[in-house]
Image 1: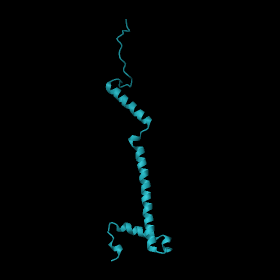
Image 2 (image 1 turned 45 degrees about the vertical axis):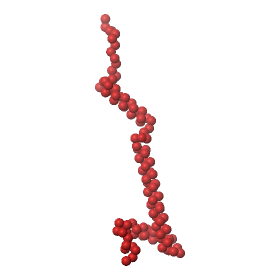
Image 3 (image 1 turned 30 degrees about the vertical axis):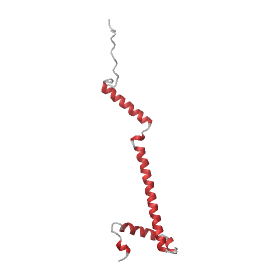
Image 4 (image 1 turned 135 degrees about the vertical axis):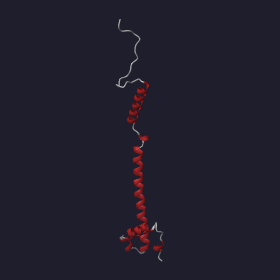
Length: 112
């Protein structure tokens, strides 16, 4: 039984893919030790995959930070504060349903 037959089933497809990817390189055929060259190429392929995943991860982290509520702009914060004040005024009865502010009635009689 060869070493490739002893590879665990859950790892076998990944190792076979890596072997086939690294075997295509011309550098292996010109190397003094082709098996060592193939291992280094496989290592390089894995390093590139890790690097690409790190870039994607950083991009997604940045996008999430931009979309998070903690990174609201000052204009948006002011608008939200104004909306909260209007809601509070409505709840306290300071603003009627028509959107006009109620004014306190004066005790001064205007009709004599």
